[in-house]
Image (cartoon, rainbow, N blue to C red; front, side, top):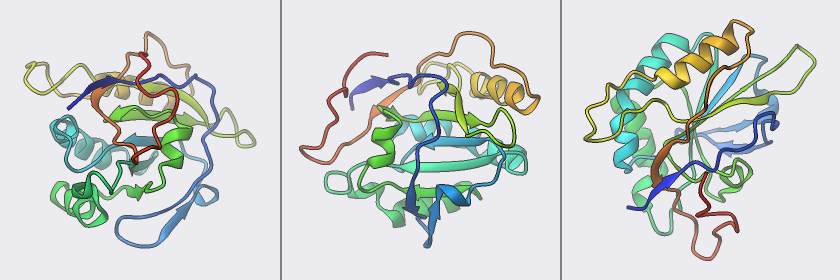
Length: 198
């Protein structure tokens, strides 16, 4: 397990285009999204850092799924990590009662567009107005809780950003890189920037 921080994609970046399969069947195209803010979460089934935050992801889904579009994204290589295949991801969603869209990024194109580096990693996109694109307002950690550090799991960093975006305000304060297991790239397909510090 390599402890890896977010690369911190520049704020203002537009939501990348995608057309990806759901882990439960069917596909989702970025054009099918509605105007509500989009929370993209790079997660997977096997990572201990993701397992640690699963209860808070369940709470966020229950509390905010009517106000934002929550999308889970698993981009780990199925060549090296078949334990993150669609059946395992669907089982993870069932166990946690997740109703949000969970996508499989097997070719890792969306992960690369996001400069994703670790699991879990969080990206919050929102529109300035009805005619503008979804742009990045927050990226980084859920909160300061990590496996074994006894910091409460409450989602405070992401929740503060969500509160700001939903009230039409600017996201204030420092955005702290998420830390977790590195994204497992397909062999020979690691992006050139992978491994750079945030």
